[in-house]
Length: 421
Image (tube, rainbow, N blue to C red; front, side, top):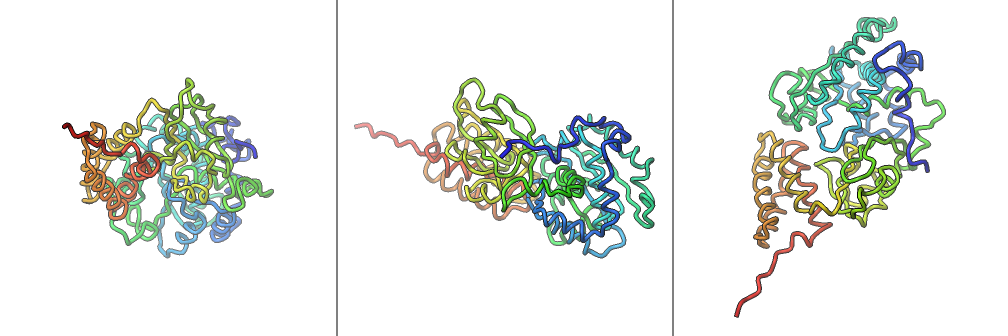
């Protein structure tokens, strides 16, 4: 199996990302023309047949999502591209936004056609503000060329516009309903469900939300007549995935890999191994909300089933953070906890209070003053958060902690005082 492939990233370096003409020269918008000769159900079925799962973290079946969005009856709908990419250690969408913005726009237009939407919104994280001018220029060029606007490419009644919004840097706005609230100019806080986003999302319209990688995958998949995508990966998990590898490795970066590659191959072959001859301590998968893997799990296959079978995060955002022995497990957990304590919106009690208390327990463990009762309460609060929080932030904030308690029980051990006679 080849360790890297070029499918979603097939256009990288082949055209000028500031020029529509350059994108058209390499075949850009051929996929859109093909899509306009298909109905939305056929496009959704193509995604389903290729086993495409959402690339933003939830891994929801993308063909099913588009079918459900298409089935909602409403005079107006919208497509939202989640370009927030707020998960720490995740930076693969940034590569797509900077190196292939027209493929993303083409994917968004196809999504609009497939689900029956008339507006698309790109919600981009504040830290990517340097990419705004290029993306705004790309949208403007598409409008002038007839790929956006009224009666697109002569298809009577297909009116579609794309708008670019920037967030203010809140991690919670990566959650779909909080993102929609932020789009509307409100505080980015999750909504109660139901109604679900597909019925009432941005601007109270039926909304289909996908992330940058998911939408960028659509154009090459529509043109994949030889079935290259499905030939990659494994029988139960076909295709490719963009991953972001960072931390204590020699060659951090973004790689497009076939599903089925192992964590060991990713860390030691693609990323060059641990820097300066240090020893691997742990690997966090899927960003700060992901679980921790121990060195004994490096031969786990990078597939949804393989990761789940190893009790690891099911791919998540595609982030792989490598940590060597210079950082202690408890030190790492305290850093992660600081992040979630800061980013919690405070709307629901389990997340707001749970994060506060768990931070105190971790401080006691670091100082060596914790008790058995502290450990029991910490685990209890973490489990309550994972089952009772209002949104994905609170539900996954303690994934690292709960997995560390399984993988590294020794670091939570209570020191027994020696009785002095």
